Amino acid sequence: MRRFLCVIFLALAVGAAAAQDPATVSPGTFQVEIENQWVRVLRMNQAPHAKVSMHSFPASVVIFLTDADQEFIGVDGSRQEIVHMANDVVYTDATRRAEESLSDAPIKAVAVELKPGASRDGVVPAALDPMNVDPQHHSVLFENDRVRVLRTVLEPHLRGPMHAHPHYVVVYLTILHTTMTMPDGRKVDNPRQPGDIAWRDPLQHITENIGEKTAVEIQIELK
Image 1: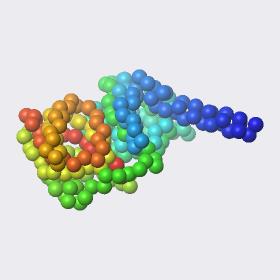
Image 2: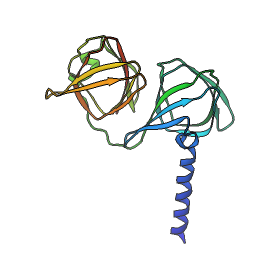
Image 3: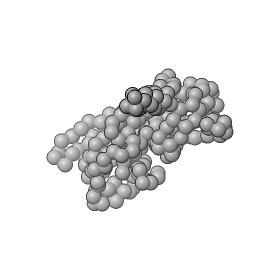
Image 4: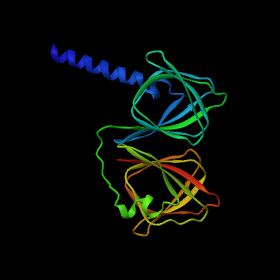
């Protein structure tokens, strides 16, 4: 009987968690683009004035692809208006809320949910840290005990030095066409459109912008 009750309670807990999943609560607004043992990455496309009922997020990094004007409603009924500009990047602690768009245009964003307990490897030597070898083209937007978030700006035909990253998510803010040259000389072609998302395992490479326009990307490095 005790085992039977435990199974019931476990099923109820799993069901409750699923009911709070934003991709389940509002699949028209949130779509899962990437999921692995380290992260789940959601693409958000909220229609003008659309509402999303109560849902939960773990600790996350959010990259806004458009301007955003939203009202967040807490579990206690409190209301807070949140305004962001396109290309803003923010870190949010775990939260549970409902929300409503106050915008007359669609709100687009990428949410990188951080999973707890995943093993961390691929520590980058200081000599290959992009902030040490190429600070002119990389800047730290913020850093805490979970992530370091970099903004990278690559002028046309720029070829950077060899550098490395741990596990990371890349969100491309502009059209981009780069090649990545690996330590063994192998080249990887990397054409991207604004809003594209990529997951990368620990990687050491040289980046060259072979496009005709300045390219901007956000890199969420995991610790």
